[in-house]
Image 1: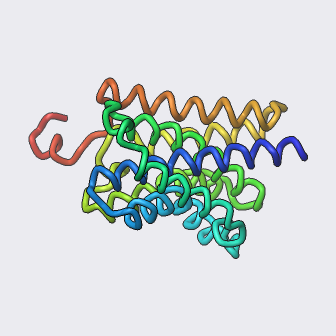
Image 2: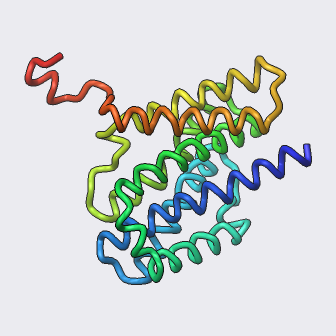
Length: 212
């Protein structure tokens, strides 16, 4: 149990920093000031976890009861603001980091739902909300359509990952660490593959134009 808790903590901080970096980069690309970049870093880093905790009744939410998460996000946002210029030149950096964060937070959200004893559907949705919630708020704050609504097998990858996590936890004797790494890697992988090969669910304009 101690080892499992340590794995969860490591994943949690890792995912928080990864998502905070994406928020900071998006803030830089949107020409925000230092405060704006730090706010976006915090929103993306802890936003999904806040939504999840509120949905499942885990209050006070982790981001408030453990201020270290917000501190990590603020420090990350500050670092990206001052030293993130080199990241701007990396092609599709937000897409790749988003994919990693999506995988990590899908597993974390599903794990928290599992530990709270909610229904199987609730466990899967807890993973999805944790993974996509912060990114949705980020995109809205910078005035773009949230990627989860339009692009590249995003929330679907998280949904599939949540289902796999649930099945592995309930029906296999695999250790928690192996499940965490496996499912997080799987979600990250299919998200990147879907983006690279432009695979997506049917879109409204395709039906309207008769391309289906």
